[in-house]
Length: 188
Image (cartoon, rainbow, N blue to C red; front, side, top):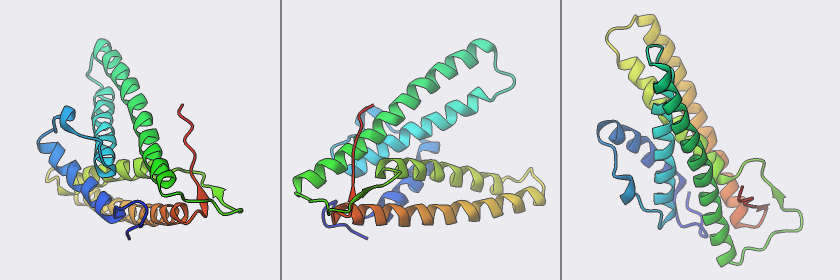
């Protein structure tokens, strides 16, 4: 679904997230070249922060890692979490700017959503990472069939969740573009 005001398709953004997770496991992008000039690029940059965060958290769980390594990883996680939150705000600010440029007027009964579009996109980013890693578990040859079966069930749930989140994001964007919902960025 395309929203006249926002000029992007949610389904294309989400498909791009899934593809990027695969690509980045083979070759990390040069993050200096990940632009944020358009919304799709901003989503990719935020998604890459989650990608880095996921793998730092994996390192933090390594039972054989020395304390000094864990401390360094934890500091990196703190920095990435702050960047993640900043990127969510940047996505929301981008959308708010689009709404303002298009003079979208709120209806008298316009409500705030409990979750911003940026927060939903962040959840979808993490969901894409979970889907990739759950599928990776299914593809492992050195695990029991029971493990693969359990992971297959979890993958179906993750895909269902992704579809529900997609619909929620589309509905929120439609409501924002019609002035039925209000968007506010708190700049924390």
